[in-house]
Image 1 (tube, rainbow, N blue to C red):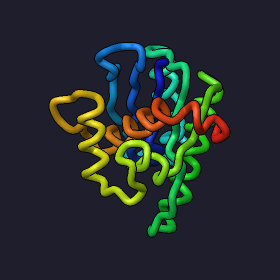
Image 2 (spheres, rainbow, N blue to C red):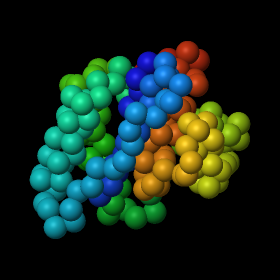
Image 3 (tube, helix red, strand yellow):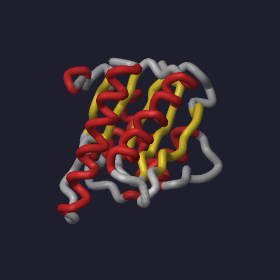
Amino acid sequence: MRILGIDPGYAIIGFGIIDTEKADMVVDYGAINTPKEDSLPIRLETIDASLKFLFDKYKPEVVAIEELFYFKNQKTIIQVAQARGVIVLACQKYCGNIFEYTPLQIKQALTGQGRAEKAQIQYMVKAILGLNEIPKPDDAADALAVAICHSQTSSILNNNRL
């Protein structure tokens, strides 16, 4: 199964694509960046176009998205929520098989502990995928963690489907 994991954001959207049927599961990872000089509509359009490109190139069967969590910066939460809406819509248009996971579920799937630190998650992403180093940027490592979470828990958590 080819899974696109997404760590939603506004300025940086992490993505990670794994294929559970291959020994070397990592297909690609990285980040979609939206320039701060661009207006909100242009940034949202960049997100949509970039996701379309990823779907056309890699043809994932499933999308796993991290749910939003409370942000301390109230100004940023609105922009991130708007970007997440565009991300969910694009995933529905281009794939239609969407699952979402809370940060707690992702941490538990990768480490067995819901209170794991970011460094522990990154280490587990590297170890599970057999990588030589922790993926950069952090958003890409987070997106790969979401994809791994889905691969490990999809049969149990199918009721989280959007």
